[in-house]
Length: 154
Image (tube, rainbow, N blue to C red; front, side):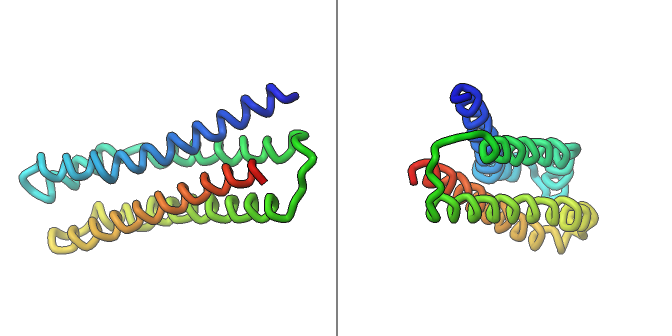
C-alpha cells in the first residue's frame, strides 16, 4: 500500500509541477520571445491563437489528473496523523486549486474569445489582463503546491 501511495503522490506532484512549469515558461519565455519576433501586434496575436488552439482540454485534463490523484491520496490509508493543521492545509490547498481551475476556465471561455475578436486598439488591454491572470494562476498553483508539501510535514 505504501508503494501505491508513493506512486500516486509522485504523479500528483509531477502533474502539478508540469502545470506550473508550463505556465511559467509561457509567461517568461514564450510570450516575450514571440512578442519580440513578430513585427506587429496582430501577427503576435495570430501566433498565440495558433499556439493556444486545443490547449484548453489538455490543461483541463491535466487539472483533472491532479484532482484525481489528490483524491486518491486522501482516500488511501496514510499516516495516522489527523491534526487540524494538516486538515487546514489540505482544505486551503483544495480551495486554491479550485480557484486556479476556475480562473483558467473563465479566461479560456470568456476572455480568450473576446481577445481573438478584439480590435487593434483593444489588444494591449487584453495582453495586460492576460499577464496579470498568468501571474495570479502561478501564485495560486505555487501556494497550493507549498501547502501540499507543508501538509505532508505536519
